Image (cartoon, rainbow, N blue to C red):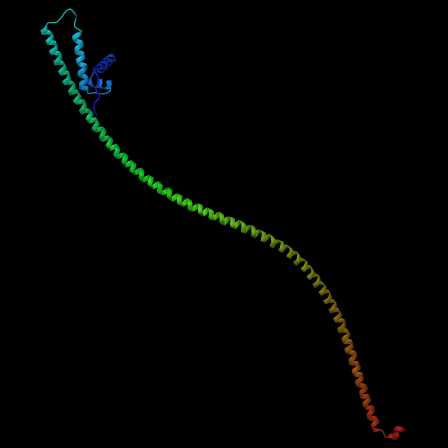
Length: 253
């Protein structure tokens, strides 16, 4: 790419502007002012302008002798050459200083870049670790969600089963209440029957006692009758024996 050329007029205007604000007019100051170009060329253009201005500033009507004019031109040329050499030397020093600064900046930038790369590596490792943790947490969250859904389904089933158990329990309670009432009624009936049986048993015992007394009386009567019958039978036997031993004539008399 071809370097940008700056006109003498723009360089001179830049020098005049620098002089107007009180700044030293150097090649680098001119370069900064015009926005580019070689500092040596810019300084040379400005020095030539200064020389021309010095020549035209001579008092009119008082022309210098040729020897003086040549001496002034020679001195001006020598001064310009000295100034150019000084500018070149200063430029070289500035370039060296700039190179050193550039080297320091590059070295610092390299260290910063290495530090940044290390930090980026650490950050990448941290990001990988976080991504791994995030994946694990997402997997765990998915597992927990599945477990939650399963628990919810189990809880719903248990709720339905509990409702059914409650219904069956209520039904059993109703049945138990009815059975309890029936059992109480049956118990009352059994108690009444037991009391009746006890009364009947008492009456039966009393009747039995009476019958036993009557039986004993009947047995005594039967014994008396048997004894009387036995005595009568014995009397009959004695009478029969007597009848059998008496003669008929006697019996007739």
